[in-house]
Image (cartoon, rainbow, N blue to C red; front, side):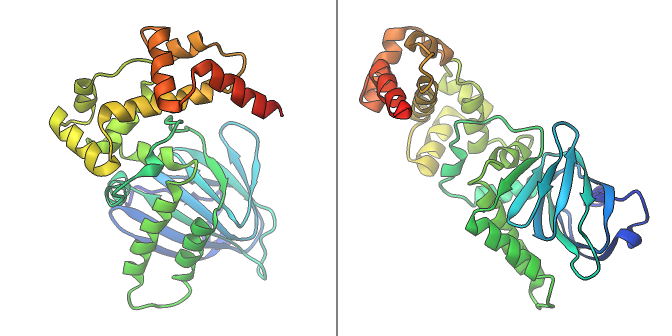
Length: 302
């Protein structure tokens, strides 16, 4: 991916970053950087999704919008394609360098990893809008272990290093599907993706109206029969049942706000009548929307 522009320091790179190991190919560029002296305003940008993991030290990240924030070990930072941040290294020195791992992934690489997830339960999300700003998150143990394993592969000269990197990159991406960065990963595949993920994404982006199965099939570039078979194989349900399940999940979320009326929630989710919404909700949840709302808002207050 020769078009990557991962680090663009304002002064010569050899002054700022003394140790840099990279593995680069058509679908990913993977680098580990050791920064040995304090610096400000180092630019970080790539045309593809970029994952950053802190190994040692501390950075201060300045996004194009919002306040600056600290980035420390135990955390991951994921940048949307084309996003640009500038970074300060306030604590770096020769004895305790600031070490960071970066991983730039082409959409095709993400797509192939997602295709290996047979039952992508993590794709079922109530929030399907990909953020346009960097995502900073604390690492769950599995994600932290994947990060440390990748960083450790640069410390030795394993004869199968490239293969091990590929395996661990796949694990890191799968771990990220369990985090708030999952929509960024899925959004990377949208241009090339004409299958299940495209159908799921379409459902979540159009929860405010009824979606016909034929319409969903067209969004996934499938015939209705192929769409039905794909849903059954991958998710164990039908497209219609999946759409209903997601709308009911969203209804429960909206009803947790005591100021929301059942009528308003019904129309927010595209039901043509309140009675139809109430009947569907009770069949799915076991309570009417009003009983459910009174119960959960009472629990929250307690």
